[in-house]
Structures are given as C-alpha cells and as structure tokens.
Length: 152
Image 1 (spheres, rainbow, N blue to C red):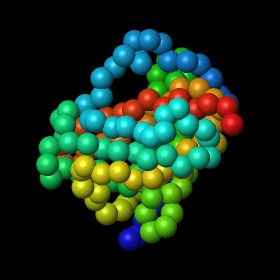
Image 2 (cartoon, rainbow, N blue to C red):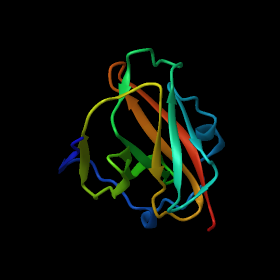
Image 3 (cartoon, rainbow, N blue to C red):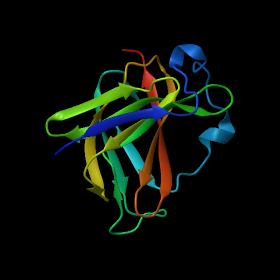
C-alpha cells in the first residue's frame, strides 16, 4: 500500500514547547465527538503502541471510511493545535510526523473502512491531555478522542 506525503503553506501551527503545556478547560473535555473513537490503553506513555478504534455510530454509517492518518493535537490555551500527523499501522509500519510550522501535511493512502482497529505509536510528548482527531471521508464528519499521556 502506498503512502505519499505532500506539504503546502497553510496557517501557523505550533509545537508543544511553544505553549501546549496547558490542560484543556472542562468545557473542552466535555465536548462530544461526532464519531465513536477509542484508544486502548488510555492513559498511555509516549513512544508506546496503542490501538485506535473507529466504530459505527455517531454520524458514521456503514460504508464510510477514514484515511490512514489522524492528527495529534494539544491545547495551547486558546484552542487545539496540530502538533503531529499520526499514521495508522500499515505495511508493517506505524509512525508519526511532526507538524511543520506554516505548513500542512497531506497523507494520501487507501481508504480504511469503518469499523476498524489499527495500531498507532504515541508521539514523543510530555505528560498531559491531548486529542486525536479523525475524519470520516464520505460523511465529512470530524471526531476525536482525548488521550492522557503519563510519565514513563
């Protein structure tokens, strides 16, 4: 299976060391996802593998699909910002790519039918609360799951 990466100029994105050391407010943590996503285990440690699952339900119906990439986001005090692109396990590889300031990464790959369970690797981030965001391609629905990264 082929994965191609392309980058293009876009809105500013920040790295964890530039303000993503804040805990999201309770109102953010109470938000309800439009997709049913889970991560096991959760809490998890940076560098470990975990299983990201997308289930039918919410606004995702049979026949919908997701791509092999999801975004890893942190709270900077004003909103969620993308700090990594995380690639689901494919062809023996689960990986992540740092988001580049001033650019966006597009992951071109085959469609992954919903429901699914795929391994991911947790990026090298400090302990805290993060968000994995995914998108159902056919329904154009965004969903998320909160992730607690703990000390090694």
